[in-house]
Length: 251
Image 1 (tube, rainbow, N blue to C red):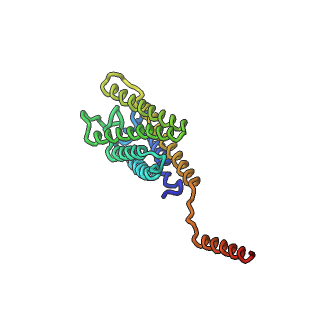
Image 2 (cartoon, rainbow, N blue to C red):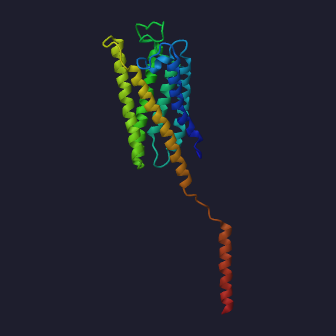
Image 3 (cartoon, rainbow, N blue to C red):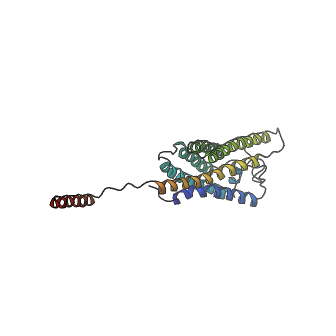
């Protein structure tokens, strides 16, 4: 049985770690424009290894978190789907990390954009789709769980985060395709995707903190059932018997 909040730290740390690496790497990488270029493009080229490793590490952290909350939310009043969606998120991050996407929109500088998607880019897209599906599905499932528990503010926060992630991720994909096909010259594809990352992984960290507190409150308030002591019952019986004998003698 999980008795402390330590196992939940994987879920608390994974999202902020990923966001920190993405923001720092996007700041120092030459030629990267976070308004135009997608987050995944930071994993391309010879300097893409920090983001690739971070994706895999954070995927492993979320996988362990999914196992932890799978055990925790199995209790009455818990949720089955929330840990499953975190498992989907974890798988998506690992796939996106081990298979980098193709160069695109002039980044990384000097690397040509292939005419067709490479197999690695296809796997990366599958991983990215699973990642966003995990964040969106997890937010919806957590929102339902929170509302059942009477925590309406957390419920709306989770549902709202899922909606924002879905909207911004979809918009980022549309803008990216329009730029790639020459329909528009430029657009905020990267910024929209970054917003989806910040909202999605920020929610995941907040959820990990919340479920850890929920678990601790259940652990501290659950009643402890004590087994009756046979010796105490024997002593009580003997005491009652002695009192009965004294009463008989008094007569």
